[in-house]
Length: 227
Image 1 (tube, rainbow, N blue to C red):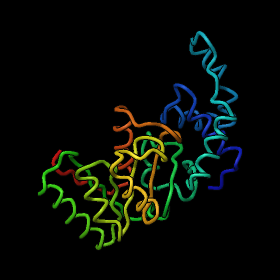
Image 2 (image 1 turned 180 degrees about the horizontal axis):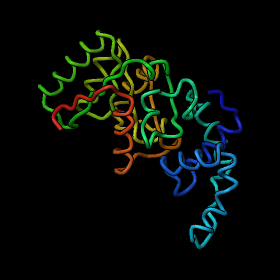
Image 3 (image 1 turned 120 degrees about the vertical axis):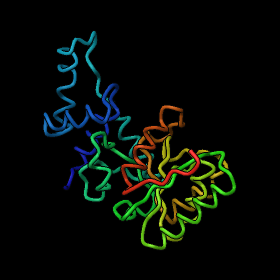
Image 4 (image 1 turned 90 degrees about the horizontal axis):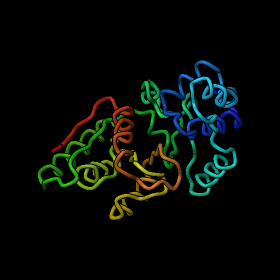
């Protein structure tokens, strides 16, 4: 589907509006047809829903700034229904309406397998993750993981040559953990980085389960090592 620049901006604004999560977002699009029409309806909908104050859409200027910051960083925003949005991820009921991506985005629509696990992994656990990721990568699969220390790091390192996807919990520009800075930049150049959180967002505990659903949503299956 071809989505106009104005509708793409409206979808970002709708998704960044307070109390509009992925499921609510998709229901609003289904009801109103476009994000632009949904944004117009938000204040009246919140009043009818009993809200003390009308729900204010995310400011247009702030959304434009987010897009600009991503572009300056070398990333771009993908909205659900665009042709290169990951097709498997799109099937989730709570698929992220907007993701920020950087790198070889064609990897997002290939055969993907998730490999995740313990941060404080044993040597044998890391070896299992490396062996499996390397061999399955050479068999034609892209490996998706979360850039965390331990198992995730082992999986990414083993699959750089064949294709790796790092789904981060914060903004696409926030490297976490800091010791994976070199790995992050290698993945940005040779693989692809994916973020749902806004540009500049520091990762906090509640972001990680949302990050994990993206890894599993991208993948045909997930290998969990030592967790």
